[in-house]
Structure formats: C-alpha cells, structure tokens
Amino acid sequence: MNELSRLTPPAGGGVKEKKRVGRGQASGTGKTAGRGGKGQKARTGNMNFIGFEGGQMPIQRRVPKRGFTNPFRVEYAIVNVGDLERIDPKEPVTLESLLAAGALKDGRDGLKILGDGELTKVITVRAHKVSAQAREKIEKAGGKIELIEPAPRKTPQQRKAEEKAAAAAAKGAKGPKA
Image (cartoon, rainbow, N blue to C red; front, side):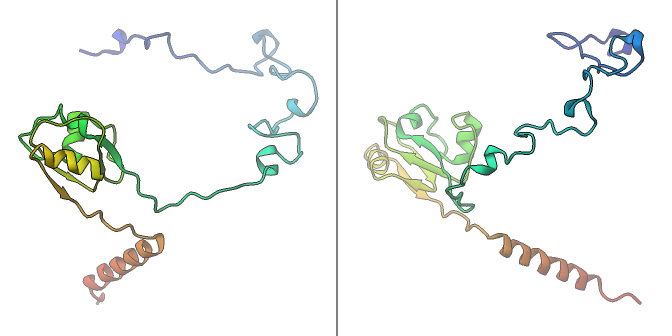
C-alpha cells in the first residue's frame, strides 16, 4: 500500500529543489543573486535565449531559406518480402497486423511492400502499394495481393469548410428558440 511515509525518491537521485536567490547575505546568493555586478546580463528581462546575438541580426535570420515541405506528402511504412516470412500466414498481412506484431514502429500513411528477401509461405497481403518485384515473389509463392485505396487527403480549406457546414447543420438541427 502506498503511503506518504513510504515514498522513495526516483532512481538516479531525488528531485533537485529550485535555488532560491536573493534571500539575503547569509544565503550565499544574496545581494546580486548570482548575477555578478551590473551589465546587460545582470538586468531583469535580459535577452538570454538561444540564438540571441546582442541585438545583431541572428544567423538563423541572416542565412537564406531554401526548399519547401510538401504538407500532402504521403509516407509509407516499408516492409520487405523477407520480413513477411516471419509472420504467421493464417490471417492477411495488413498495416494493423504488422503494428500489432511489432514489425513496424508506426503506421505512417499506409503500407508499402518491397521485394528484398525470399518468401516461401502462402500469404495474403493487404497494402497500399506493392513493388513489381514484391508482387512477383508473393504470387510465385502462391499468395495474393489486395491493394487498398488510400483515403484522399484534404486541404486545410476543405477541412474548414466541412467543419463550418457541420456547425451550421448542428445549429439548424436544434431549431429556433421560442
């Protein structure tokens, strides 16, 4: 049973208490509170954040920016045919079954099967994409492939319009107040 009297500090040491500065000369951090005497760094509200260069234009703003990150890029979780050899062929191989088996860390936007390795088992694969080499190896082993059509991605404008329409429909469903 957990009781306050039986609590122990976390492994690797306890929780360090915050240093209380400016509590008089006897505390050891009195008078200037560990900031030294005078100067910009001794003042309150000093600009000590990462990248601050004393008012000069910081390097992260001076360097020209290049490139572009596509918000609609589709990233697939990749599995090789050789990895499917270790999976139980009783049920179809899907993204969810691979995640449950621990063969994948995260699902990303879909599943893609690549052709590295050999396959001897007869399996059914449900994936979003399959390479030509992987398709050949799976069908050669007697398995079959079912392609899943990925859900279309919506732009932020489309999502906003749908939310607005849903809000209007919900408001209209309540009816006028009498």
